[in-house]
Picture 1 (cartoon, rainbow, N blue to C red):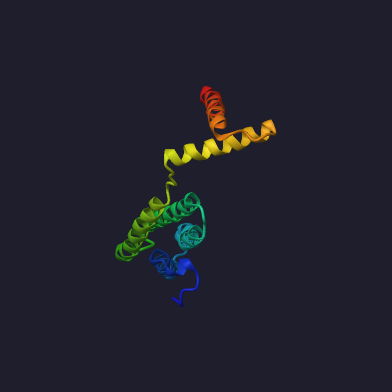
Picture 2: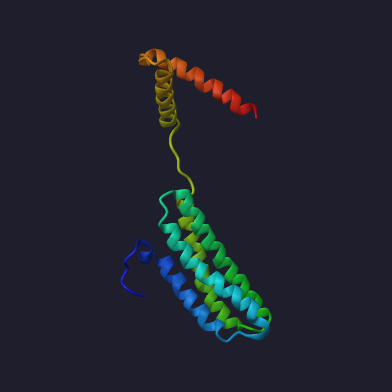
Length: 171
């Protein structure tokens, strides 16, 4: 591969996925006839792995990033299943499939770990409570048209929060 320019170029999983795609394309050149449908599906699924890794790595939201990495992971698993079909139907020899599947196994493992890292964005309850109170304080100030002291606004904000929670929990 060339010198890394983008962040995804530096990822081992991206480089390995590009290698896998190149190898699958080389093997797919020899597939025709009855195997053309599996070949066509393979030629779509294999490049989907590095493409989704690149897109996911560029996402700012951890949840968006994890979603694209999960899609890449799904494409890698699809490639493994396509290889199984090709081996069973005589289009691919078992040793070639095993070699390609070892790469897929590494790719799936890396993508699983990467997606799990970005699965959850957490904030402590104290931070959340403070944020909610602060937002409601400003909402009450805006509604009344006057500045409300912090001591008076917090109890009012709590009442407002509780009334909204009651409405939400009923549905």
